[in-house]
Length: 343
Image (cartoon, rainbow, N blue to C red; front, side):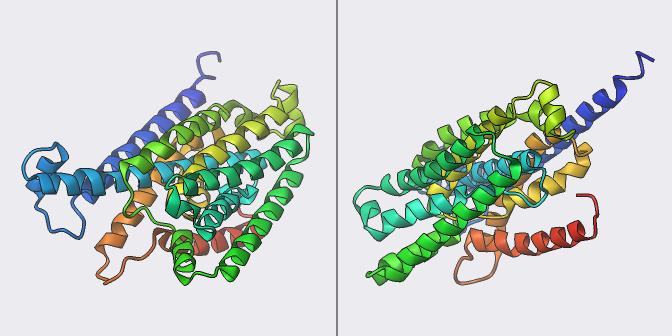
């Protein structure tokens, strides 16, 4: 009997390792393919030379300073959203939850729009990302107060919906009152979301915040597993629910808001990816975290690659593409939930 019991655990760990390795390999392949796609017609050999700084210095600039940061930023933002979505769905025990549910995305967007409205971002380039993080921090503080008072999960969800709605309303008000049509056009373009024309400075700006946020989210796995049994059972197992809520909310704020700060509104990644990988790891919340992050990175890099492959005169915005995929998926989830199907 003692030799048989560990088998499901070992099997789950092996399945998790295989799924993660497969997604990591797919991410490397998609990212490498994205290096060869762009507006400038560059041969495969020239791209490889440019990646390592050899050959024509102009090609090296295109590959290293334009294409590579775009790919890295898409991968980071996708991973952050996928990871945050998996953690939030486990915490709230709601298959329809994503980073936008707690108001972080909308509040970060509001902060960035305010910097555009007052023209601060034109004077100081760091004003927009810092304002976005300030908006997300404010939303997080409100939820922190609720979590610190041992508010129920439903209360946290409703508070997040209220914060998100209020932030969207203020964002619309700023756009409505904008006296400068050029600023309005910039706001609209930014809210649609894109990783085009980003640099390593943007990658360097978001990476530390995403790293801290990811650390908080990854270390919440034991608590998420315990929550499957219910809040009372989790408490009996020694899980501090208040601490767990604060940890996941703070991790989501850091990981997601930093991406919104530099790339604008890119939604639905955190909703879609956990559902894609959850059946592959037998629905264990802790084992969903890493594959969901990798799937988010693959999805966003692939979506950005698709944008550059489309034969159009004008690029689609990345946030538009993810919404076109995510909105029907969200509707399908609602229908499955209404029928009582497992998610």
